[in-house]
Image 1 (tube, rainbow, N blue to C red):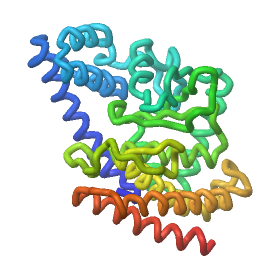
Image 2 (image 1 turned 30 degrees about the horizontal axis):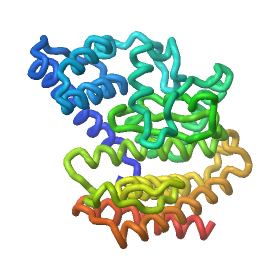
Image 3 (image 1 turned 180 degrees about the horizontal axis):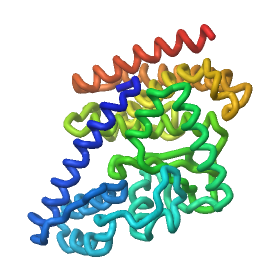
Image 4 (image 1 turned 90 degrees about the horizontal axis):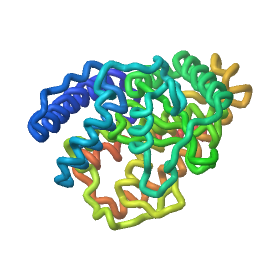
Amino acid sequence: MIRPDADLARRMNVELYERLAAALQHLVVDVLGRPSVTVLAPSPATFGLQGLLRDRALAFDLDGVAALLDRFHPVLGPGATPEGLVRPLAEPWFTPAEGEILRLGFTDDIGLTARLEAPPSDVAEETAATVSAVLAYMAQDAPGWHEEFRALVSQVVLASAAGGRQTFAGASAFDLWGAILINPSYRRDPVHLAMTLVHESSHLKLFHAYLDDEIVLNDPAERYGSPLRRELRPMNGLYHAAFVLARMAAFATAMMESRTATPVFGPQGAEQFQAEAQAAVARFDSAHEIIVRHGRLTPKGAALIAEAAFAVDEARHLALAA
């Protein structure tokens, strides 16, 4: 799970597409008594709609389920928007229905991603070009990471908090499977964007691990310090942070000795990736110590964090030896 694995990512997609089809069939046919629907090409917005329908059904609000389905039904049909991996959260890249679902799906628990707005067109174009260049050089210097990223991520959504505030770097959500959010107002230098792509796609990979396993058994009311946020977080959030940091450390060390990537990352790229690796290792250590002391994990959860610690020890050696 820590190392890149494109084949695993593809299997995740197949499984989640099958689960999506079954969930929609249940909600539309069994719950609402309507004719079945067939989704030929699921998008992140399709997953987002299923999540909205599920939440209304769990609240026993069948009128709400029906209203949401009527309102957003077009996202279940064939895509009507332009193709493209990197796209601003605006028309024509997303229909109004898709945009609304994405805004709802990316909303976090502390308001950092509330009221998302598309960046100015020039900023969006610059960021899209930089992300494309980063991915092109990643394909040369870290092909395993590039291949896995392209398997996991179908949409890199560009948006900022209202007013272009620098409140977050990126985001991801299980209910928007296949999409990650990047805030161009935060930073858009190539090394930062590369690390953010790995950061957010790593969350997607871990979300899949939670499908049939609780991973973390701590009471959600318990709060602990986090290396990636100022706010205290539940153990589940700390676990996510540790997993992501282990992947970021492994990726940064893979890029440290890059040669062909110099044109996009600049002459100091190797040093910057080394600094990123060292920072990720230190932050992982901070999170891992708390998890070891206070975490109550399932066997799968314990195995994943042990794998993460092993990968970080390898990255630690490489980052310090360079």
